Image 1 (spheres, rainbow, N blue to C red):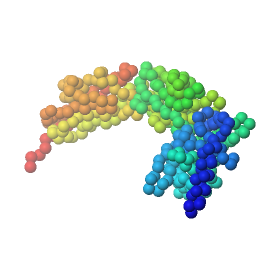
Image 2 (image 1 turned 120 degrees about the vertical axis):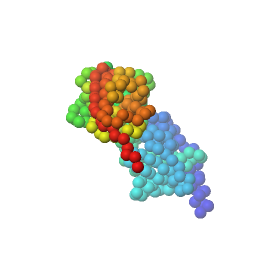
Image 3 (image 1 turned 60 degrees about the horizontal axis):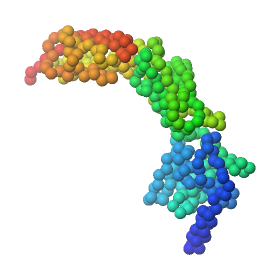
Image 4 (image 1 turned 180 degrees about the vertical axis):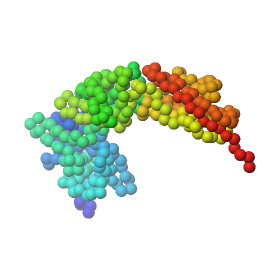
Length: 338
């Protein structure tokens, strides 16, 4: 047993002393990455942490089981140093070469990416170059955000920002999911290193109730990926839409209720302009006493309502000046004494 451990130690020592002698370029999906590579017996090894950081996977260490856990979008991979087996989700995979530790750093054979992640590994011996083709999760290296989580009104600027790799080209595409038609296609500009921005000024008549945002990125070698936003795009220029009120029209309530509220539908209508609102209760202007948010108007009652018929009226505009108004009646009764 001791002899085997000693032999393994010397094997690692020999490997560590034999970095790849010539300058070797490594490309991931056509984009050059600064990856250290060592060669032994026609196999290339690189630091595990660096490889999976570039790919966009998460790495954790389970001290109890001594497992390295690598998480991608669709795989959980468990491996141990010196073992020729890896657990990929619920199945075991046999490796040709094990993961090794050199001093304090863990190295993996690059063929591991082929065996486990179905990546394509090519070595161009003449040009001292390794190409790693791994299209599936490259979008994890990008962050995509926009400012239309709540509906934008006419005149407002819709802004899309992509954070990723420098020296490429990007364009945005928005599809109306309700009609399956393209709402907008526009180029994006690299404002800063690796930060691309696209803008669109909302026009009157624009309606987008949950558009799908896709950004296409092409690197300097012509490799293209598509990054999808998890957040739908909302644009609405027809005005605010009331979703719910309390008390509702013709509703009967007791005179000791504590709140009156109006709730707006931010997926169907535009955002209210709080400064434009007028709010009346029983024809009395109480605008100065209401609480206004982007989606609600709330009035906290300081005294019981009058018994009998009551009325509410609210009017205002959105940021584009689109008007809305609603008035309704409800009935108030007193609680029976026990």
